[in-house]
Image 1 (cartoon, rainbow, N blue to C red):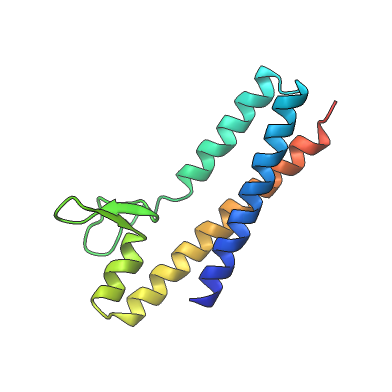
Image 2: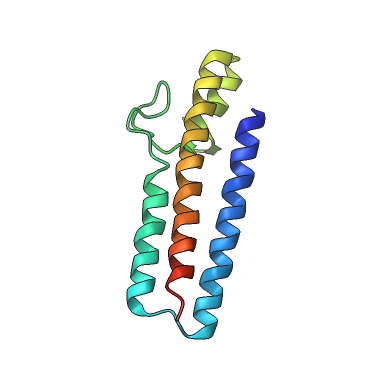
Length: 123
């Protein structure tokens, strides 16, 4: 689980740095409609990267790795991991943590790339 915590921290840092870069572009007036459109496309890709086509164990119709609902419709964060841990299925929990780590790595790289491309295109 330590690696998962590290990946979450890396994702958070990349998101904060991108947010700051976007804020700077907006405040400086250098955010063209084209740049904003590209940013929106990249952020939509981040959201898509949280989906696992196999779905969460036992409920394949829920494909989002970050959130879902319980059978009671109550919210559920990290659904595959949470449910595996509640069942004390440690092998499944490790598999779910690995899926989360991969998605976090992919999205962290995307956020860093997005920020880097914005900085290269400064006026």
